[in-house]
Image (cartoon, rainbow, N blue to C red; front, side, top):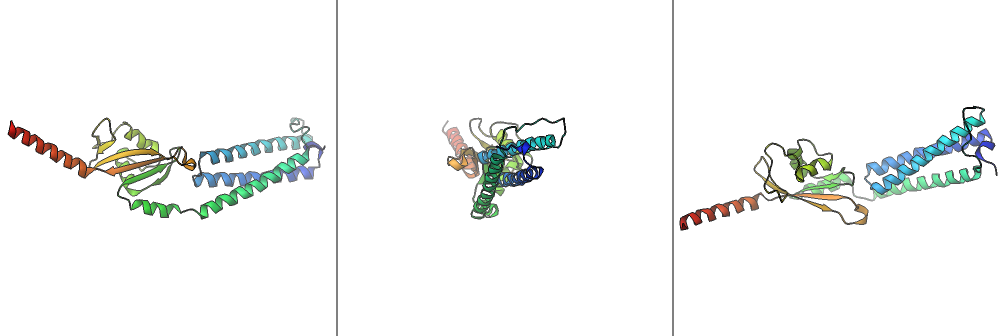
Length: 237
């Protein structure tokens, strides 16, 4: 069977142009999956397909230059039938068109980021969702306010906040009330408790939900009760 080096220059150019189109579509698919936070597995799959296609393009260009008489190049795709290359590229092109269409359809049928964020802002506690890479997927205003006080900057990477919660360096005026719990006293005299949960849904594997609950009323009521008990004990003695 005819391999790539034995086919005409026009056919070689056609195959390389077809693969270039596939590379462009692969890059589009990769960017869509990264920007829409579709999970690490899908992103890795897109990166792998792009890397393999890019490597194949290098092989095709190498053999093409060999066919043009450039002695510095040696055949790589020897004995690789051009019909197999053509079929593989057509299948890849169809797959990429289908994958991009599916991702766009999924995006248009899902709730928008802004509508969800507006709803989350109405809850009385701070809420933050982060992906397996530590990137912030969703974070409401209350959590942004708390994290800005704790880390000194706008929350962009969840690991920065997680280090403080887990015992890292604390900002000025911030005080952990108990070494065994994630309850913090803030400079504005409020007390917040932080809790972290790992999402259990298969599609959300590795995602974390962090909740900050305002426990100021509970804390100060407890302090009043302890103070009253102390005074009563002093009177008894």
